Image (tube, rainbow, N blue to C red; front, side, top):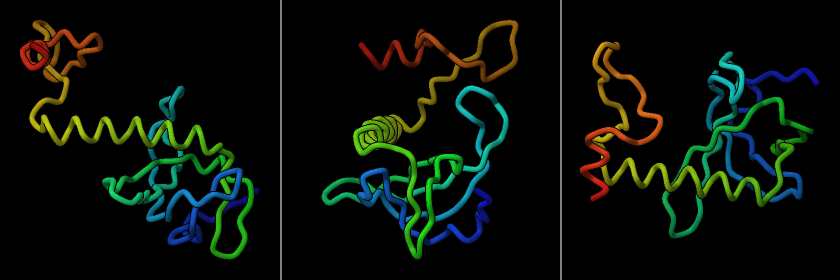
Length: 128
């Protein structure tokens, strides 16, 4: 299906069961999960009562149909809720510890190497 990304902005995103996920606010090109090639993602603005607002990225390849003001994606409600919960936890941790990025400098490498095993000095000090 040929999709014009500009026509998707300000439409309502829905999942397989036709439950509203949120509103599409923009289209961005982000690296894919397995292949680090830029792919278009729909950025969905998720709002829940008594919870923080969140922007959720979803691949445009997962679109099943477009009708009127709705866009249906190939994702189940349970999967969507799990991902939103995971993103909210990450966002909360970043709000609590804004200066801690999980990055540190390894001697002999360039600055900003990733700490894959959470062994960095700052994170150890914070977890004690």
